[in-house]
Length: 444
Ligand SMILES: *[C@@H]1O[C@H](CO)[C@@H](O)[C@H](O)[C@H]1NC(C)=O
Ligand SMILES: *[C@@H]1O[C@H](CO)[C@@H](O)[C@H](O)[C@H]1NC(C)=O
Ligand SMILES: *[C@@H]1O[C@H](CO)[C@@H](O)[C@H](O)[C@H]1NC(C)=O
Image 1 (cartoon, rainbow, N blue to C red):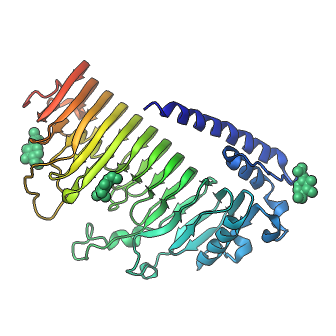
Image 2: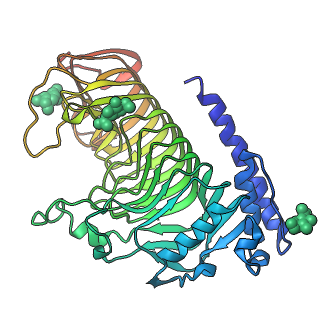
C-alpha cells in the first residue's frame, strides 16, 4: 500500500503536464511545435502539443520527420466505415513505432475507420501516442475472424510508454456477435468473441479520454502490464449483451483506474489472478454485474491477488456490488482488499464473498483446499438491495476467510418492504461503527 502515494503523485503530475500540453497545443495553433521532450514523463504532453500542430506537419513525409504525427489518412485509410483500413493503421503504427522521437498515430476526427483483427506490437524506439479523434469500428462480418483467433480485435503488445487518448470512440459493432452467443441463443455453440482493446506486456501505459462501445465481448483487457493508468473512459453496451465485461485486469501490477463510467452486460470490472496494487476510484457502474475479484482457483489452480482498493464507486442496478468469488479446490490467496465509499442503488448482492462459487454446467464437487481470503475491509457502504442478501460471506469450511472488517454499512431493502439480511458461513469477521443489517445474524 505504501507505494500508492508516489503513484498518485505521478498521476497528478501527469495530469498537470497534460493540461499544460493541451493548452500549449491550443495556443500553438498553426505554428509548428517540435516537441522534443525527451523525459519519459513528458511523452504525453509532447504528443498533445504535436496534435496541435498536425496540419503543418501533415504535408511533410512521415519518414523524414523522425517523430511527429502519423495520420491514418496518409497511409491509405478511407475512413468511410466500409472499406478495410486495417493495413493503413498497421502501417502508420509501424512507422510511428520505428520513430526515434515521440510519435503520434492519429485517427482523424469525424470519420469511421473499419478494422479487422490488428496487432500493434512494440517494442518501439520512443513513446507512442495513439490519438483517436474519430471512430475505430470493428468489421461487422464475423467471418473476418478465423477460428485461429476469435479472441482479439485491437491488440497492443510489448509497448513501453504507450498512450491511447483523443476523445474519440472504439466501436466493437458487437450486436452480430451477441446474437450468436450461446448465452443468448441456446442453439449456438459456445465460441469466443473478440475483446475490443487488449493490452499485453505494456509498461507505462495510459489510456484516457476514450469511449468504448458495444464490444463483441470484453471491452478492455489489461494483461501482464505494469504501471497502468486508465482515466476518463466511458464504456457502454446493452445491459443484456453477453460477457461484455468493462475492464478486465490480470497478471498486472501498479494499476490505477479513475473517473470511468461503465455500463455493460457483465462485470463492470473483473479483477483476476496476478493483480497486485490496484487502485480504483470514481467509477460509476451499471447496468452490469458489478465489481468482481475473481473468479479465482478454477480447476484447482493457484491464485495470487493482493493490494486492491476500490474507492468511491457507485453501482446502479447491478447484480453484485463488491464481490470476491473463488472456486473450491484452488490455492493461493486474495488479501489486503478494501472496498470503501460505495453507493449501491438497487443492487442484488451488495456485499458478497463467495468461496463456493461455481459457474459450470455440472455442479462443482466439494473440495478440501481453497484460495485463502483475508484482510478484506468493507467500509462506508450504503444504499439499497433488491434481494434480502445485503451482506453474504459464504466462506470455505476448510480455509475460512479471516480478517474481514465490516465498518459503517447501511443497506436497506429497496422500497422498504422487508428487512435486508446478512448471512455468514466460516467467516472470521469484526464489525466497526454502525452496520445495518446487523452482520451475520442467521449463521456464524
Ligand atoms: C525545430 O526543428 C527544426 C528542424 O529539426 C529546427 O531547424 C528548428 O530550429 C527547431 N525549432 C525549435 C523551436 O526547436
Ligand atoms: C495465477 O498466478 C500465479 C502466480 O503468478 C500462477 O502461479 C498461477 O499459475 C496462475 N493461475 C492461473 C490459473 O493462471
Ligand atoms: C454457501 O454456498 C453453498 C454452495 O453454493 C450453498 O449451498 C449455501 O447455501 C451457501 N450459504 C449461504 C448462507 O448462502
